[in-house]
Image (cartoon, rainbow, N blue to C red; front, top):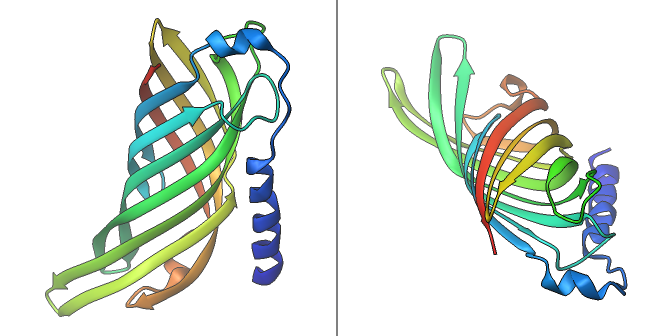
Length: 191
């Protein structure tokens, strides 16, 4: 079953790089890149940078997103819990639903994601260490991007379905949910 999902994820990610011929000359004058600081509550929670650009297009009001984040996760098993840290990388797209030409307003998006969190903590009964990692091609979100000149505020919510890699060390994936809610905020600058 995981082979099927892996093949489906590879095929889905190939759509991210599909190009659409553009005959609109007025787009050359639009601002096309936004760099944002982002924070997101999820499992794992993420703090990092987001890059939104109009380089590879599916349509007029679609953008591509790359998120690079520091990840923090709490692993709770009955009598003890430990904190881990690592990284998460997401590549995806976004579609805007406003009537104007600006990339703002209501949008939906989805990401192809990979995360890796390492745990290394000394507890009363000994050392706890291990690695939790996941892959996801289903992380839909909905948000609303508000622009104020070159600055933007972008709250969003969504959900992620994770395909978990077998845990290493003391990590057992049965203590981690495959379905994870997501909520966050991006504060960005467009140029």
